Length: 199
Image (cartoon, rainbow, N blue to C red; front, side, top):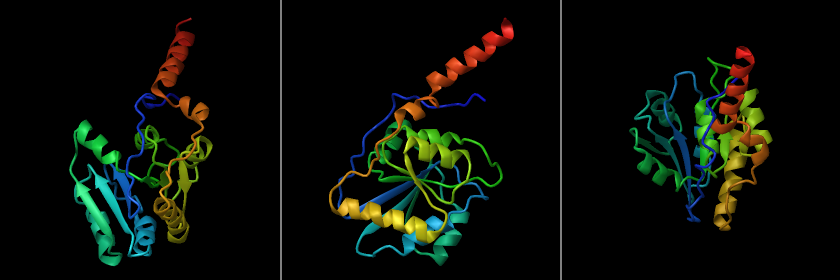
């Protein structure tokens, strides 16, 4: 299988140095089958003296999420689609990316996974797909896996602890594993397949 992949040279560094806030970001379309309840519930249980905001970038206001906010009031910001410059400005203040499984399409690598991987903030997959997304995150050491609000809460509390101490949150990536998913590698893979079929 040949994947869309990502441009491996478009990585950035984390610049949000605040010791009193945690910015979580979900970028792109929100689908009805996605379950954001574990992550939103976990945020609602975090210490109130530490500002945690969940940003939905490029999704606009979502009825799926808004319904959950009535049950678990947390700090949320919705933005419309952004141009590349504005998007990268947002990402420069990101502490962690949020990703959920896609029950309607199991066993796929969403483009969002690779888009997140390009940047240094860790990914939180909650709930897990128990499949290729989880495998990629674990093997590339690019984030964390959670399935319940309690598991996600533990991860977030650890991130908050690091923020309070002034420590960076990024993980030491396994770039050797991750590089095989780059657009450069996938293009090479496609070329090899085409060459075999034309011989």
